[in-house]
Amino acid sequence: MIEFSTAAMLLKVIGVLVVLLQVVPIMVWVERRGSALMQNRLGPNRVGPLGLIQSLADALKFIFKEDPIPGHVNKFYYVIAPLVALVPAFMTFAVIPFASSIEINGTVVNFQLAELNVGLLYILSIGSLGVYGIIMAGWASNSKYALFGSLRSTSQMISYELSMGLSIIGIVMAFSTLELGPIVVGQTGSLVESAARIWPGLAQVPFLEHIPRWGVFIQPLGFLIFLTAVFAETNRLPFDLPEGESEIVAGFHLEYGAMKFALFFMAEYTNMFVAAALVTTLFFGGWHAPGLPHLLDLAGLQGMAREWVRILLEIATFMLKTGFFLWFFVWVRWTVPRFRYDQLMNFGWKVMLPLSLVNIFITGVLIFYGVI
Amino acid sequence: MLSVSPVFFYLFAGLAIACSLLVVFKKNPVSSAFSLVLVFFAFAGIYALLDAHLIAAIQILVYAGAVMVLFVFVIMLLNADAPSLDIARTSAALKVAILAGCLAMLAFFVVAFKRMSPPAPLGPYTAEAVEAAGGNTRVISQLMFSEYVLPFELTSVLLLAAIVAVVAIAMRNAKKPGSAGKEA
Image (cartoon, rainbow over all chains, first blue to last red; front, side):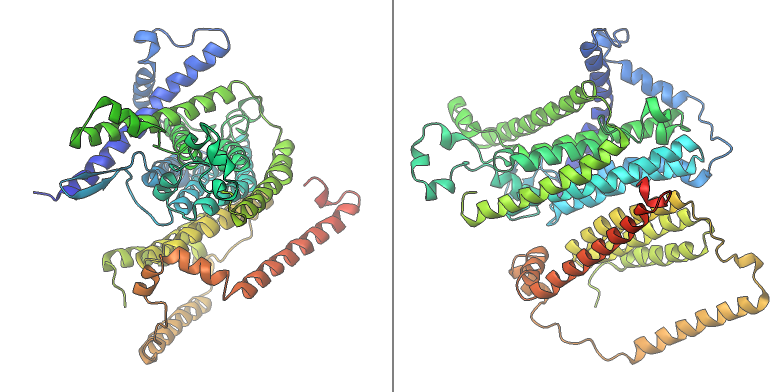
């Protein structure tokens, strides 16, 4: 008989892994159908209803395809590069809380795999390791276009990691913690709660007190910088220079085929999911839905049933917000053209970095005067 | 001294030593750099085992994540292919010298660790005290911005001076026509 907490942990790990693996085929389908929608065509619509099983068919094709290793590559690094890209993508989700906690027979179960006291730093550091997969792939492929891809990805990552890290300093300052759980809990309060102590008139304004204290309201500039940096971090358009089909063929994964290529594909979509979940957690209140307790009161639920419905609705809220940002990734990809290399560098160093420093300064002033 | 599972300690320590050897013996500079990343990763693992989560995260974020990416970038860009030490083609005398040097260093460490005085008292920052004060990260930040604020700020001034110096050198080269600094 295993302990209850161990069993709960196992269930959570399995659940999160299954969801992470399911996100990839679903997002591939959404991306292909979404791009077709924007370009006024149909997209995959033959396999299954609305083409939903297309991704499954593609996966089968990837698995059964011949998987040759070109003769001119560095075999060891060529083979492990896709894994190096994929594993960090899965690891980062471990610290993201996807619902609050529930008490079952006296044991509190948190809906978060690992409660790390440096959760935010953990995500940044593991996320920064993912670039090694791309560097290794480009270098081990021993091909000019692939090497260009990995060179671009390193310089892009150096330019954007800095602004990304600095943009969330504001969030860390406002909630004074690096743990993601407390950051979400900190966002459940009212936006004008502390400001009303300085200007009591604010509390009288109707409706204003119901606006939650979400990161996006107290850190609008930090949110914009973080969102932009996340596109660069996940190598998505308009910052997909390491891949750049029309410039360097396929960039870092030019020499890859079959399942090894599919692993890079999975890494990109898993990174997208983690990035969307992170944006949700840091800036949109994570699992917090305003007015959820009132809704449960209206439904007249009591005891454990109420708790379980609450948890399910919180998970649904989290998935809904994350789903919106996943769609946002697709939306931007098929709307904005790719940056030129020098534009990207200028934008990263001369716009994003100063702006993120300004954001930290403004946040410091606001906290000093007790506004947030 | 170590209250952690020795299995994981030996795992990470062995990984660190093995990868450090690879850094030296790999012929290709890029492979050496990848091995160095693993060394930093193993160090971070050991820090995490010691409950120093902040240092572990920063170790990966700064060293494995940022510094090494820059290293790899520079190595790839310069295409540095300097011939490193080829162990198979060295003379017998050099081989003996290397072996003797390694043994001497090992002997030195054994003697040094055996003669080492018992560890100094920990001072106010015991594991329990740190936990009571709100954890690792909080204690380090509070110390850094109160008691040690002067050294901390001086370090940033030093870094700023280094950045200014680098820009000055790069700009001097850029003024000359046809020099390398231009296309950057």
